[in-house]
Image 1 (cartoon, rainbow, N blue to C red):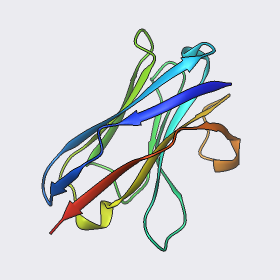
Image 2 (cartoon, one colour; image 1 turned 180 degrees about the vertical axis):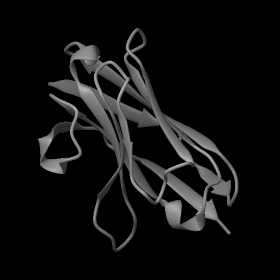
Image 3 (spheres, rainbow, N blue to C red; image 1 turned 90 degrees about the vertical axis):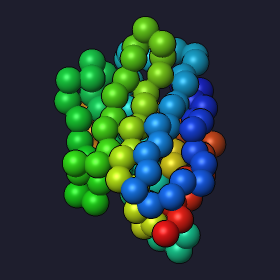
Length: 122
């Protein structure tokens, strides 16, 4: 298993930017594909973005495509989510998670961080 800790969430105005970080410890970080999820109040958890173990393959939900960028630095055991042009509907708790392979299937993610709150004001 891998331990994950998210950071970077805060209150930001609509149109602004944030970069979330997820630091991993434990087993070899580069052996895991990574995903960023979010859960907004009253809504189901959704996969926002995913990246392969090497970082050369990525996925984005339609709602964030063109605005968010997922990246990873295996030397620093960290995955990032750069969020630009933020909208009030991006308000949610954001979680990073690890999977044994690149996937968009939520149950395949087995290790989760505690989450970081992102609030976008209009």
